[in-house]
Image (tube, rainbow over all chains, first blue to last red; front, top):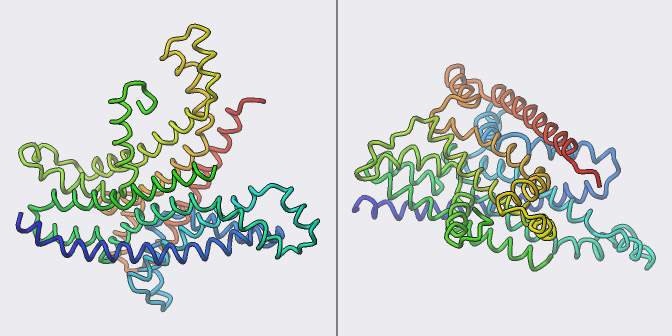
Length: 212
Length: 181
């Protein structure tokens, strides 16, 4: 019992790291996803293919392989990334590829009539996108983006495998030195992830219903 | 169970799916492998071999997601279908068996396919508790020869090709099963 209570501050610090990594990855993924998604919905075919290849690449490689490649593989090219940076970058590339599909899908879901009306009003392409399409598309992106954040939080646990001191890594280290507390510590970690992700996924489903 | 009329069955199914869907599969695998054997009394009987713990963790997580996908599929079947089946004198089980499930599976197929692909990629997690899958073997080789980028790229390419094939298979299946409208 005493050993378990002693582990709690470290778990707390781990939780803060989990949040930090997740938020940084989410911010980068949104930026990355927006750029790729808008390019895919607006650009001519010739630009569409390389971007599609990029998206499929980061969606198709297991996140853990991507993380290991960035953390263990890049130093071979002379690029040394800290474990935190490698974890954030891998999460951002993976989630960004998913985000770009969300952006592209939301833009494609805007009815044609909106575009026609907008050009009838004399708006150019950029104006149509910024003033007509995106404001409507953003509402449709919101529920899947919220769900994407839950996926990022969940996937950030993989960062523990490249020694990022996140919640899971803090738990693993404590259990390693004090084997008897494995049960309460891992139970706490499970409950902590659930306590974060359950409200997020409920919020996403509520938003989806409300905006439908 | 998720669409059952019995409240207890529905609630148990909801609790189960929500819990396993909203916790990371890696944490579930660690829990099964390292924490389960520590349960007082029954613990010593629950020492799972690594591959069993890893498989079970993945099954619980992706399975819980499948439950949600199929429930959404069942919800998407128009209510008239159930009513028509009832009007033809089919019992509740037969309604599901012959009318609702065949349609729900077709509706759910794209999402199910994505989940299979995500499961396939998540199998890399089993290496973390020492199970020797493709990724685990690659890690072992790297520990010996100290060359990592080439091996991780090779592993990545193998996964990419496999994921591509799985994706193509599910798209073909969707076409094959599509109902002409």
